[in-house]
Image (cartoon, rainbow, N blue to C red; front, side, top):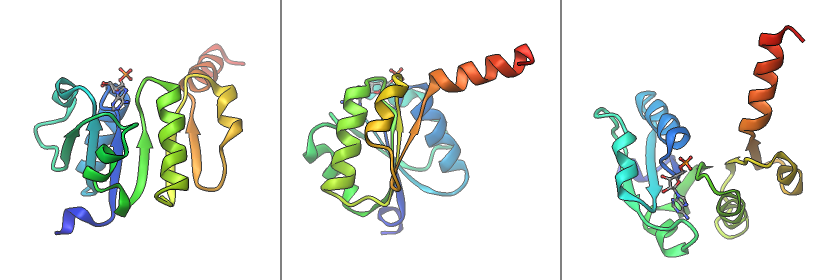
Length: 137
Ligand code: AMP
């Protein structure tokens, strides 16, 4: 089945995760979204062509149900840094995922594990740099 190959797994379907999922789906990529709250999937567009799994991403059975073993990329976008860091490590160490993108509220925690395969997104730093641009600094 085509959907099971070359897919992007997005963990957390809050505003960030859902926006990335909608965008990647529009670009024709194979997207799978996991969230522990099924109501979160309401944020996905009507045209979203991927699939959804309801479950706790810290549970390996949930990740395997969501076909993590053949994912080319995982985006960790829950609102909980501990969940995102834990699952990022699992993705790298257990499943050997080549590309892992992690949202972190606390920028100081990224330096602990960022590297070739794991990259961080820091909403705080993005906000401060946008503030500085608007402020003309
Ligand atoms: P937000 O905090 O609004 O950015 O949304 C984060 C999303 O991540 C919410 O929809 C949560 O239900 C989801 N979430 C939080 N923890 C987990 C988890 N352990 N497994 C799967 N989804 C989660």
